[in-house]
Image (cartoon, rainbow, N blue to C red; front, side, top):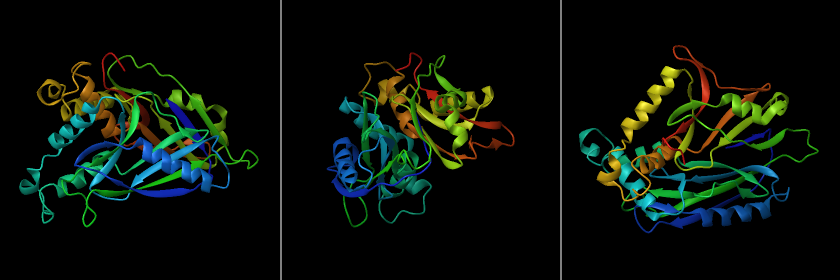
Length: 303
């Protein structure tokens, strides 16, 4: 994991168009990083010591996620999983927004499921990816977006750490967490311990936690044993292990692996929470109790 705490700062932005050749999941790490290099040249502070890279798809029928950069079957299977989770048959069965075709409203749902933007921690201007992580643009329509086809605009911004003489807090720490097994586990104390005393100095800011793996994820959720068990049950019901040999091609790492990749993209590798008056603002559920930062391990044997 990487925990990055930043008070504020400034940076640059660059927008580029990516031509997705077909519907499906496309690896766009290289063009995103090329755009990020241009933002570094535009920024007045020079290269980041620490900070963030924000990639944002300016559309409502595509999405972005972080997942495996190696086996192309993972991208094929991710598209298969999305079509199983949000089938086009729903267009006639449940939806009212149908005039743009059977893939349109399901595409809006998929876009919201995965999200339009990614916040990635950086050090010295480079994203702190794990070995197997890459950036996906997920095109959810056969004909692309309204009026633009598969030509998708992606905005890339950088949020560098504030200058050292600004008096604002900026700290980035790597930490290793070893969950006891598959399931959702509270890691709030680990994250708070990682950023240390610097947290108490932040009057207003944000804390980003980023997991450098493609079969685990992060979320905020009630931290009781019952609540975390329910979350694991829900994830396993939404993306069952039985899909592996029935629908997927990426099967060589066992029945939990490809479902783990899908769950990782649903919850996400990057989590950002507000900080106020030296404390993480997680809040409390009136029924289930305090909210916590959870690491969701989607494989029994880990990564």
